[in-house]
Image 1: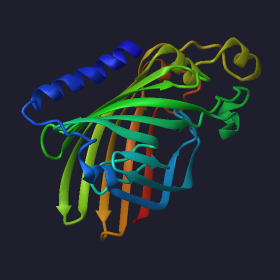
Image 2: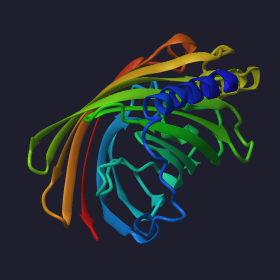
Image 3: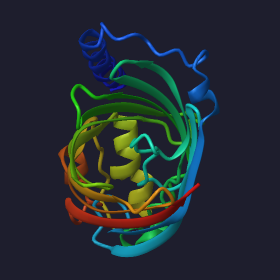
Image 4: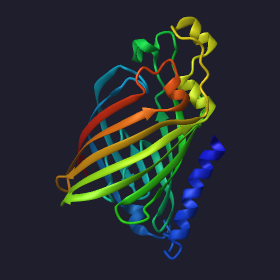
Length: 275
Protein backbone atom coordinates (compact mmCIF):
# COMPACT_ATOMS: atom_id res chain seq x y z
CA UNK A 1 0.00 0.00 0.00
CA UNK A 2 2.86 2.39 0.71
CA UNK A 3 4.04 2.04 -2.88
CA UNK A 4 0.54 2.55 -4.25
CA UNK A 5 0.02 5.59 -2.03
CA UNK A 6 3.24 7.23 -3.08
CA UNK A 7 2.53 6.42 -6.71
CA UNK A 8 -0.85 8.13 -6.56
CA UNK A 9 0.59 11.15 -4.79
CA UNK A 10 3.53 11.58 -7.13
CA UNK A 11 1.41 10.82 -10.19
CA UNK A 12 -0.91 13.71 -9.34
CA UNK A 13 2.14 15.90 -8.83
CA UNK A 14 3.55 14.91 -12.19
CA UNK A 15 0.36 15.82 -14.04
CA UNK A 16 0.19 19.11 -12.20
CA UNK A 17 3.79 20.00 -12.92
CA UNK A 18 3.30 19.31 -16.61
CA UNK A 19 0.19 21.52 -16.66
CA UNK A 20 1.97 24.47 -15.08
CA UNK A 21 5.38 24.10 -16.66
CA UNK A 22 5.18 27.64 -18.03
CA UNK A 23 4.79 29.13 -14.53
CA UNK A 24 7.88 30.10 -12.62
CA UNK A 25 8.70 28.21 -9.42
CA UNK A 26 8.20 30.27 -6.28
CA UNK A 27 11.36 30.55 -4.16
CA UNK A 28 10.52 30.66 -0.45
CA UNK A 29 14.06 31.69 0.50
CA UNK A 30 13.95 34.94 -1.49
CA UNK A 31 10.32 35.94 -1.02
CA UNK A 32 10.18 38.16 2.09
CA UNK A 33 6.37 38.31 2.11
CA UNK A 34 5.99 34.61 2.78
CA UNK A 35 8.87 34.54 5.25
CA UNK A 36 7.43 37.25 7.50
CA UNK A 37 3.67 37.05 6.96
CA UNK A 38 2.00 36.02 10.24
CA UNK A 39 -1.66 35.28 10.96
CA UNK A 40 -3.72 33.18 13.30
CA UNK A 41 -7.16 32.36 14.62
CA UNK A 42 -8.67 31.00 17.82
CA UNK A 43 -12.16 29.63 18.19
CA UNK A 44 -14.48 26.74 18.99
CA UNK A 45 -15.68 23.78 16.91
CA UNK A 46 -18.83 21.76 17.66
CA UNK A 47 -19.05 18.34 16.03
CA UNK A 48 -21.65 15.57 15.87
CA UNK A 49 -20.04 12.28 14.87
CA UNK A 50 -19.71 8.54 15.72
CA UNK A 51 -17.48 7.35 18.56
CA UNK A 52 -15.33 5.52 15.98
CA UNK A 53 -15.68 4.66 12.28
CA UNK A 54 -18.58 2.23 11.97
CA UNK A 55 -19.94 2.89 15.47
CA UNK A 56 -23.64 3.26 16.20
CA UNK A 57 -22.85 5.62 19.10
CA UNK A 58 -23.00 9.27 18.03
CA UNK A 59 -22.65 12.40 20.15
CA UNK A 60 -21.91 16.12 20.12
CA UNK A 61 -18.44 17.26 21.16
CA UNK A 62 -17.02 20.75 21.53
CA UNK A 63 -13.31 21.46 21.26
CA UNK A 64 -11.09 24.54 21.08
CA UNK A 65 -9.65 25.19 17.65
CA UNK A 66 -7.40 27.55 15.79
CA UNK A 67 -4.11 27.92 14.00
CA UNK A 68 -0.98 30.03 13.78
CA UNK A 69 0.74 30.58 10.43
CA UNK A 70 4.15 32.14 9.89
CA UNK A 71 5.07 32.23 6.22
CA UNK A 72 4.98 28.66 5.04
CA UNK A 73 4.74 27.10 8.54
CA UNK A 74 1.52 26.35 10.44
CA UNK A 75 0.59 25.01 13.86
CA UNK A 76 -3.02 23.87 14.04
CA UNK A 77 -5.46 22.43 16.57
CA UNK A 78 -8.82 21.10 15.44
CA UNK A 79 -9.29 21.64 11.70
CA UNK A 80 -12.05 23.36 9.79
CA UNK A 81 -10.76 26.91 9.39
CA UNK A 82 -8.91 28.50 6.48
CA UNK A 83 -6.08 31.00 6.19
CA UNK A 84 -6.51 34.41 4.59
CA UNK A 85 -5.22 32.76 1.41
CA UNK A 86 -8.43 30.69 1.51
CA UNK A 87 -6.51 27.47 2.17
CA UNK A 88 -7.63 24.87 4.68
CA UNK A 89 -5.09 24.15 7.40
CA UNK A 90 -4.31 20.60 8.46
CA UNK A 91 -4.08 19.52 12.08
CA UNK A 92 -0.62 19.43 13.61
CA UNK A 93 2.67 21.04 12.65
CA UNK A 94 3.04 21.62 8.93
CA UNK A 95 5.18 23.27 6.30
CA UNK A 96 4.74 24.13 2.64
CA UNK A 97 7.92 22.59 1.25
CA UNK A 98 7.52 23.24 -2.47
CA UNK A 99 5.35 25.18 -4.87
CA UNK A 100 5.19 25.36 -8.62
CA UNK A 101 2.37 27.35 -10.12
CA UNK A 102 -0.88 25.63 -9.16
CA UNK A 103 0.87 22.76 -7.35
CA UNK A 104 1.67 22.86 -3.62
CA UNK A 105 3.51 20.19 -1.62
CA UNK A 106 3.12 19.97 2.18
CA UNK A 107 4.71 18.03 5.03
CA UNK A 108 2.75 17.64 8.23
CA UNK A 109 3.19 15.95 11.62
CA UNK A 110 0.04 15.37 13.66
CA UNK A 111 -1.02 13.51 16.78
CA UNK A 112 -3.02 10.35 16.07
CA UNK A 113 -5.22 10.10 19.16
CA UNK A 114 -5.72 6.36 18.79
CA UNK A 115 -8.82 4.75 20.27
CA UNK A 116 -9.94 3.85 23.79
CA UNK A 117 -12.19 0.92 24.58
CA UNK A 118 -14.07 3.28 26.89
CA UNK A 119 -15.20 5.32 23.87
CA UNK A 120 -18.11 2.94 23.26
CA UNK A 121 -19.67 -0.20 24.78
CA UNK A 122 -19.06 -1.80 21.37
CA UNK A 123 -15.31 -1.70 22.10
CA UNK A 124 -15.46 -3.53 25.43
CA UNK A 125 -12.59 -6.00 25.66
CA UNK A 126 -10.88 -4.69 22.51
CA UNK A 127 -8.16 -2.81 24.38
CA UNK A 128 -6.80 0.59 23.40
CA UNK A 129 -5.06 1.79 20.25
CA UNK A 130 -2.14 3.89 21.54
CA UNK A 131 -1.52 7.53 20.74
CA UNK A 132 1.21 8.09 18.17
CA UNK A 133 2.59 10.64 15.72
CA UNK A 134 1.89 10.43 12.01
CA UNK A 135 3.84 12.15 9.29
CA UNK A 136 1.91 13.09 6.17
CA UNK A 137 3.07 14.13 2.71
CA UNK A 138 0.32 15.79 0.70
CA UNK A 139 -0.13 17.51 -2.64
CA UNK A 140 -2.66 20.23 -3.51
CA UNK A 141 -3.35 21.10 -7.13
CA UNK A 142 -5.60 23.88 -8.43
CA UNK A 143 -5.91 23.10 -12.16
CA UNK A 144 -8.47 25.88 -12.77
CA UNK A 145 -10.07 28.51 -10.52
CA UNK A 146 -12.49 27.11 -7.91
CA UNK A 147 -11.29 23.51 -8.39
CA UNK A 148 -8.85 21.75 -6.02
CA UNK A 149 -7.46 18.22 -6.21
CA UNK A 150 -5.69 16.78 -3.15
CA UNK A 151 -3.88 13.57 -2.24
CA UNK A 152 -1.81 12.49 0.74
CA UNK A 153 -0.05 9.55 2.38
CA UNK A 154 0.63 9.18 6.12
CA UNK A 155 2.89 6.88 8.13
CA UNK A 156 3.39 6.14 11.83
CA UNK A 157 6.59 7.96 12.82
CA UNK A 158 6.86 6.30 16.24
CA UNK A 159 5.93 2.81 14.99
CA UNK A 160 3.54 2.32 17.88
CA UNK A 161 0.61 1.38 15.70
CA UNK A 162 2.19 1.13 12.28
CA UNK A 163 0.45 1.15 8.98
CA UNK A 164 0.11 3.49 6.04
CA UNK A 165 -3.06 5.29 5.02
CA UNK A 166 -3.88 7.24 1.88
CA UNK A 167 -6.55 9.76 0.98
CA UNK A 168 -7.47 11.69 -2.16
CA UNK A 169 -10.28 14.02 -3.10
CA UNK A 170 -11.58 16.85 -5.24
CA UNK A 171 -13.35 20.11 -4.25
CA UNK A 172 -15.39 22.71 -6.09
CA UNK A 173 -16.02 26.17 -4.64
CA UNK A 174 -18.74 28.74 -5.39
CA UNK A 175 -18.73 32.38 -4.29
CA UNK A 176 -22.27 33.05 -3.07
CA UNK A 177 -21.74 36.65 -1.98
CA UNK A 178 -18.84 38.76 -0.71
CA UNK A 179 -17.28 36.75 2.10
CA UNK A 180 -19.60 33.76 1.61
CA UNK A 181 -18.55 30.52 -0.08
CA UNK A 182 -19.95 27.06 -0.63
CA UNK A 183 -17.51 24.17 -1.00
CA UNK A 184 -18.51 20.69 -2.19
CA UNK A 185 -16.09 17.79 -2.04
CA UNK A 186 -15.78 14.04 -2.56
CA UNK A 187 -13.02 11.50 -2.17
CA UNK A 188 -11.81 8.17 -0.81
CA UNK A 189 -9.43 6.70 1.74
CA UNK A 190 -7.39 3.51 1.66
CA UNK A 191 -4.86 1.77 3.90
CA UNK A 192 -2.44 -1.12 4.11
CA UNK A 193 -3.17 -4.35 5.99
CA UNK A 194 -1.49 -3.22 9.24
CA UNK A 195 -3.59 -0.06 9.50
CA UNK A 196 -6.81 -1.86 8.55
CA UNK A 197 -6.19 -4.67 11.04
CA UNK A 198 -5.49 -2.19 13.84
CA UNK A 199 -8.72 -0.24 13.35
CA UNK A 200 -11.09 -2.85 11.92
CA UNK A 201 -9.65 -6.27 12.74
CA UNK A 202 -10.07 -8.54 15.76
CA UNK A 203 -7.06 -10.54 16.91
CA UNK A 204 -7.31 -13.94 18.61
CA UNK A 205 -6.31 -12.31 21.91
CA UNK A 206 -8.97 -9.59 21.57
CA UNK A 207 -11.57 -12.24 20.77
CA UNK A 208 -10.92 -13.86 24.17
CA UNK A 209 -12.04 -10.67 25.95
CA UNK A 210 -14.55 -9.17 23.50
CA UNK A 211 -17.78 -10.50 22.06
CA UNK A 212 -16.36 -10.87 18.55
CA UNK A 213 -14.88 -13.71 16.57
CA UNK A 214 -11.34 -13.23 15.21
CA UNK A 215 -11.34 -11.17 12.01
CA UNK A 216 -8.49 -10.32 9.66
CA UNK A 217 -8.91 -7.08 7.77
CA UNK A 218 -7.19 -6.71 4.41
CA UNK A 219 -5.52 -3.83 2.57
CA UNK A 220 -7.49 -1.74 0.12
CA UNK A 221 -10.17 0.90 0.01
CA UNK A 222 -11.39 1.93 3.44
CA UNK A 223 -14.09 4.50 2.77
CA UNK A 224 -15.80 6.96 0.44
CA UNK A 225 -17.03 10.39 1.43
CA UNK A 226 -18.84 13.50 0.23
CA UNK A 227 -19.08 16.84 2.01
CA UNK A 228 -20.60 20.31 1.84
CA UNK A 229 -19.24 23.32 3.75
CA UNK A 230 -20.54 26.88 4.02
CA UNK A 231 -17.93 29.48 4.97
CA UNK A 232 -18.69 33.03 6.08
CA UNK A 233 -16.01 35.67 6.49
CA UNK A 234 -17.92 38.15 8.66
CA UNK A 235 -15.09 40.69 8.42
CA UNK A 236 -11.30 40.72 8.74
CA UNK A 237 -11.64 39.63 12.37
CA UNK A 238 -14.40 37.02 12.55
CA UNK A 239 -15.01 33.87 10.49
CA UNK A 240 -17.44 30.98 10.77
CA UNK A 241 -18.27 27.75 8.99
CA UNK A 242 -20.87 24.96 9.03
CA UNK A 243 -20.63 21.66 7.23
CA UNK A 244 -22.00 18.18 6.76
CA UNK A 245 -20.24 15.08 5.49
CA UNK A 246 -21.52 11.63 4.59
CA UNK A 247 -19.19 8.65 4.48
CA UNK A 248 -19.41 4.93 3.85
CA UNK A 249 -16.99 2.23 4.91
CA UNK A 250 -16.19 -0.24 2.14
CA UNK A 251 -14.20 -3.44 1.71
CA UNK A 252 -13.00 -5.28 4.80
CA UNK A 253 -13.69 -2.19 6.93
CA UNK A 254 -17.41 -2.50 6.15
CA UNK A 255 -17.36 -6.26 6.73
CA UNK A 256 -15.69 -5.97 10.15
CA UNK A 257 -17.72 -7.21 13.13
CA UNK A 258 -16.95 -3.86 14.78
CA UNK A 259 -18.92 -2.04 12.09
CA UNK A 260 -22.50 -1.48 13.23
CA UNK A 261 -23.25 1.29 10.74
CA UNK A 262 -21.17 1.35 7.55
CA UNK A 263 -22.75 4.69 6.59
CA UNK A 264 -22.55 7.75 8.80
CA UNK A 265 -23.37 11.45 8.63
CA UNK A 266 -21.33 13.97 10.60
CA UNK A 267 -22.07 17.63 11.26
CA UNK A 268 -19.74 20.35 12.45
CA UNK A 269 -19.72 24.11 12.89
CA UNK A 270 -17.21 26.58 14.19
CA UNK A 271 -16.49 30.23 14.83
CA UNK A 272 -13.10 31.90 15.17
CA UNK A 273 -11.54 35.27 15.78
CA UNK A 274 -8.64 36.09 13.47
CA UNK A 275 -5.56 38.06 14.46
